[in-house]
Length: 56
Image (tube, rainbow, N blue to C red):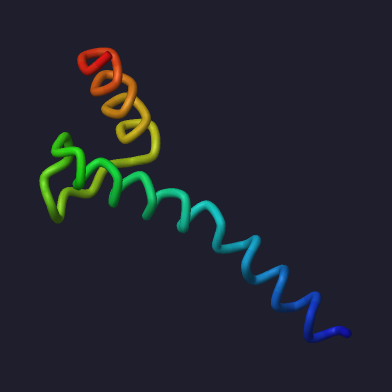
């Protein structure tokens, strides 16, 4: 039982990084982030908002 909670805690701890990886992957696929570019979450969110504003 203790191991299970430890596993869940580690997954939750890595959640912000996993979300950031998703944003980077999605932005690269959609073409508004060149591959290998490192942006903060705020920069990624702004770029995503701009992309969707332009492509509606």
